[in-house]
Length: 457
Image (cartoon, rainbow, N blue to C red; front, side, top):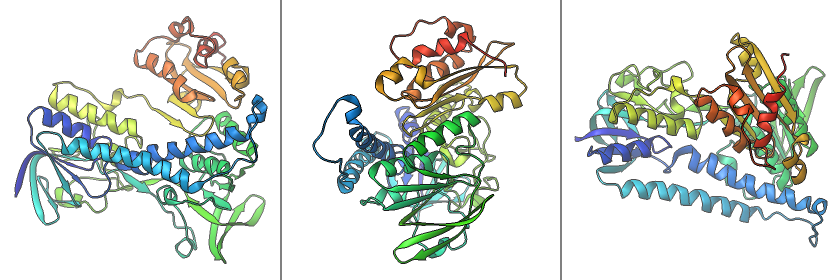
C-alpha cells in the first residue's frame, strides 16, 4: 500500500493545477490518469474544436474574399486530412505539455491506470492500493447517447469521435441544436457538407432568450444549414452507405437522408465505474457527484471538481474549482462557488459571449428588469469588418442598478462580454460602466451606449 498526502483522480483542468499547488507546499501527491492527459478540454473539447473552428473560418472568409476586394485563383478547397493533422498537432502538444508538467513536478507521482475506490481513504489502480487522507475526484464527462429507436444499428458520431474524421461528409445530420451541435454544424457546412440540425425543443439553444435563439437560427440558415425545431427523431436506419432519420413535428412525419450522423444531445459524468458506493460518496440521479459550495462531497476528506460535480461543464469552471479548493485548504481562505457568476461562450461565428442571467431568468427571479439592446449591424466595428450578424444585450435591475447579465452575439462577443463580467464581480452599478470611455472602433465601446437607452419591457 502506497501512502500519500493526497490522491487526485483525473488530469482534466482542475487536477493538475491543484496537484502542483499542493506539491509546492511539500505534500506528496499521486495523480492518476487512465487515458489522455488534459481531460476533455485538451483532447476532445475546447482545444481541438477551436482549432477546427479556425480552419472553417478561414475557408468561409476565403469564399467571401471578393466582398473585400481580394481575388484568389480558383475555388476554395478543403484538405480535410490536413485540417485534422493541424488539429491533432495542436491538441497533442497541449496534452503532452500537461503530462510533462506533472512528471517534472517535485512531490508529484504520476500513475497510469483506472482508479476505483476501495474505501473512503483507499483507491486501487492496476492492482495497487493507494491511500490518502484527502482524495480529489476530477474525472470529467463524456457525450450522452439517447435511446433513439434504431441508433444502436446505425453508424453514428459523438462530439468526441467526430474529431477522428478526415473526410468531409456529404450530408451531416446533427441531432441536437444546442452549443456543441451548432459549433459542429457550422464548421462542417463551411468545410463543404450539407448540414441538417434536428432539435426537440421549440428553438435552438433554449437556455438563451428568444431573440438570441432567433438570431442564431438566422445566422445558420444564412449559410444554408437546414434547421428543424420542435422536431423529434423517432427512428434511425441504415440505407446503403447512408443513414435515414425519421423526424416528426407539428406538420407530420418526414425522412432525412444523410451520409453521417452526429449525436449532440448533452453529456454525462464519468462516475459510474469509480466504486463511489464503496466510499459512500453520494451522486444524483444523473450520476453527478453531490458537493457543497466548497466542492466537498458528503464524505469528509473527498472533494469532486470539474464537470463530474454538475456545477459547470466548462474548462473555466473546472479550473476555478481547483482555485477554490486550493485557497481553502492551503491559504486559509473561505472561497465558494456561490460567489461565481455564470459565464460561457458559444464559439460559432459570430460567437456568443454570455455573463450572468438572461432576461428570462432575471424576470423569474423577481427583478425590476431594464434591458438595453442593439443589433450588431449598428456597431461600427462589425460593419467595417463585414460581420454584422447578431445583437448585443444587457440586463440590469432598475431598483438596485446592479448589472444582472449580458449577451453579445456578434464579432468579438466572446471577448467584449468580459467588460460586463468584470464589473459584475466588482459589484459596481451599471452607471459606472455607462460613463466609461472605451476605444473606438471596437465592439466594447457600444456597451456604455446600451446602458444609455435602457427600456422596461
